[in-house]
Amino acid sequence: MKQAIHTNQINTEIELPVMEHFYTIQGEGFYSGRSAYFIRLAGCDVGCSWCDVKESWSQDDHPLVPIAEIVNWVAQTPAKLVVITGGEPAIYNLETLTLKLKLIGVEIAIETSGCYPLKGEIDWYCFSPKKFKAPCEESYLKAKELKVVISHSSDFEWAEAHAHLVSKDCQLFLQPEWSKQERFLNPIIEYVKENPKWRISLQTHKFMQIP
Image (cartoon, rainbow, N blue to C red):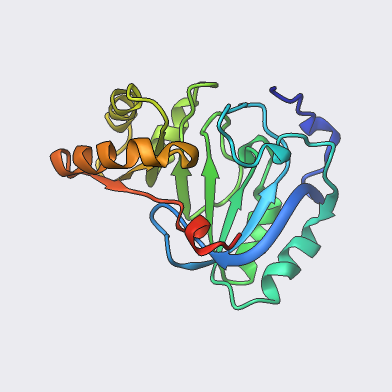
C-alpha cells in the first residue's frame, strides 16, 4: 500500500527521517564489493509489490534525526562512500545533508526510482525505475547507473526502453528480483551474453548475510 508523504512538515536543513544506517559492503550494482556507509531514509510512495524493505515506506514510523548526527555517524568510520537510499530518498531536499557529507570528504551515491527531481550534490546517481510510478525526465539525464530489477519476462523489453533514454556512458545492470532469482537468473545470463552492453547485478550482501 502506498504511503502518504508529508515533506512540508520536515525542515530538511536540520533533520531527516532515518529508518536505519550501517557501515557495510555494497552488495549490488556498480559499486558492488566496495565498503560503504548506508543511510536509509524513511518514506516512499512508489509502492513496489516486491520491495524487501517495506518497513521503510512509512515516514511517520521512524525518527527525525539531526543532520549533524547523521554526518557524525559517517565520520566515525573509515567510509569513503556514502549511499543514500530508502524508501525513496529523492522526495526530500538533500542539499544540506550532501553539503555536510562533502565537507568530510566522502563520495556520495544515491539509489532512487527517479520519480522526483534531485535536490543535492550527488557523485553517483543510480537510477532504478519502477513500473508503479513514472520517473521524471531528469532521471535519464543524471543517471550514471541504470539498474533494472527483473521480476517478469516482460521486464527485459521494459529495461531496453529505459536504456534507450539514458546517456551512452550510463552503466547498465539487470538484477533478478530476490524471491525470483532461481527463475530469472539463467534468462538474465543468456540475455547479457546476447546483449553485452548489459551487466548482471546480484544482491551479494544477502549471500554474505550482511546488511
